[in-house]
Every structure is written in C-alpha cells, then in structure tokens.
Image (cartoon, rainbow, N blue to C red; front, side, top):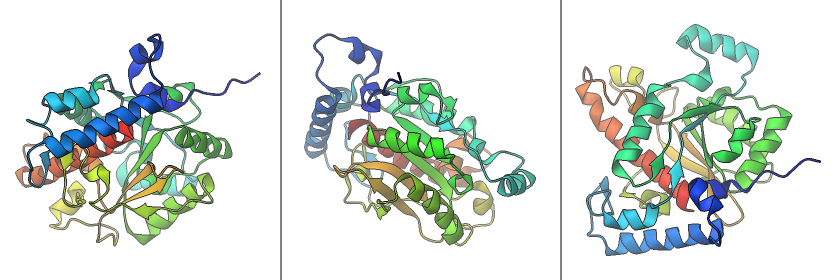
Length: 293
C-alpha cells in the first residue's frame, strides 16, 4: 500500500519542529510568521531601494520572524528533448539543468546564512521522482525552457506544489522560451495561468524593501553592454497561485538571477557588482516569502 507523502510545509522548520511534542501545526506557524513579518515591517524605520525592513538586515526583529526556519538550495535535474539538449550542449558545454552550478547555489547559500537567521544547509541536486523531494519545500529549475516533464513528473510536481511547496524558474528569455515554459506548466496546471506580481505584492517587502523587479543580465549580455537577451527586453516576476493566493510557482522571466550569484565573487568584473547585489536581494525575498507564506 502506498503512503501519501507529507505536506512539504512541515519541512520548513526542520526536524526539531517535526518531532517536538505538542507543537502547533505548520499552517499555524506559517500564519504566525507572516503576521510577525508584517508587524516587523511596519515597526522598522522606512528604508530606501534595496534596504532591509529589519534593523541591520539580520537584526532582532528578523530573529523572531525567521527563527527555526530551515532552507536548502534544491536544484532539480530534469530531462530535455534530445534535439534541444544536443544544441544546448554544443553551445554551452553543459546540460541546461546544471547551468551556473555549483557556484551559484554555494554563493546564494552563504549569503542567506549571513544576512538571515534561517538555518541554511548544503545545496543538493534532486530529481522530481526522488523521495527526498518531500524534504525540501523550495526547488529550483534553471533554463526551464529546456524542460520536458515525464507524465509521472507532472503529477509529482502538481502534488508537491499543492501540498505547500514552491518552485522557482530562472534564466529564460523572450517569447519563444516563455511559450516553451508555459506549455510545460500547463501540463501541471491546465486550469491555472501565470499572473504578474508587481511591487505591491508582499514578496517585494518580506525581507528587503524593493521598489522594482530587477533585470539581471547574464555575463555575456553584460559584456555586450545590454541587460537583455533573446528579445526579452522587459523583466517580469510571474507566478502561478494556489487556491489561497499563495505564489507556488515563481518565474524569473527575462532576467538571469543565477549569473548574479555565480559571478558575485568575480573581481575582474567590478561593473557587474550592482547586478549581483540586486539578484541576491530579490532571491532572498523570494525564498523568505516561500518559507513564510
């Protein structure tokens, strides 16, 4: 007899919370965290673009809100159509699912541990059919225009998201790649469509106070003195929402967050530092939102 996998929201506060007798349900803990987050934002001094709503970024207010939360950068290894995979390998000398790794997740994990009180674990690589998927409430797909889900993966991803998980899609650009991603996600949720999230959405203020969604150029675009590629001129943060309005799929479209983290230590490119800072702030907000909503 098969056993239904756990609600992945139960993984957000780690093993200690899962085994503590008499602990409140995860939904209740998430509600408390969200309420404290809102209160901390209102009480904190007003701040400018890119400044944290918490005192000194990781000050005492954030301790109370984020204490006990746990996060792992979980990169998903996926399959691609054979022809597209061969073209990608010829161009980039890499499989699309592995782009920017491992430096991107290592750098982002270090930054998360430095500026928040969240317990940050070592990054992992998973496939959707791995049992360990259910231990990780946040998963990451890079170059998602190259995804081709199996039928089994479609069902697993749908259940993962509806049970409280969050999937981030990053580094895809222009109308052709948007169409490819939208087709795959329509297999997961035929009855749900992407919506745009604007700066009024709590994802822009749940840790850093951000006034706009950034366009992070890949390093190649940066060398060409542009911030866009493949006709993707305007950046968008788009989401698929669950029945409660929670953003369970986050699509970083016409922007390359992963390059921002991967190259954040590259002293040879000082002009790129402004983009690495923006990519860290935006992604930390996305992760904090995923763990508290």
